[in-house]
Length: 111
Image (tube, rainbow, N blue to C red; front, side, top):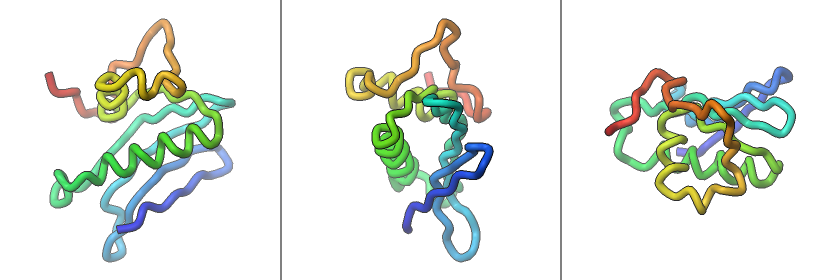
């Protein structure tokens, strides 16, 4: 399954995978200036546990670095990845006074 990319004129974008004519995974984001807000990651239940979200995350990191974006990890998955290895993402992680909770995509982080 190949990861595809799209971004519209309003700078809303996603990395996504289509399979058999339907979208089965996505990582959605919005760009404002040099800030990329990664606010949702989703993989259809039948494909969970296959590393697909990790592949989408890797594409996001590559894209952000290539375009010199800082990333706000509003999505719980992205935030968890950043928190696990903060030194690996210190060049990307956009810190704010009111840090994201990771609840933007409606999935609460595991405790």
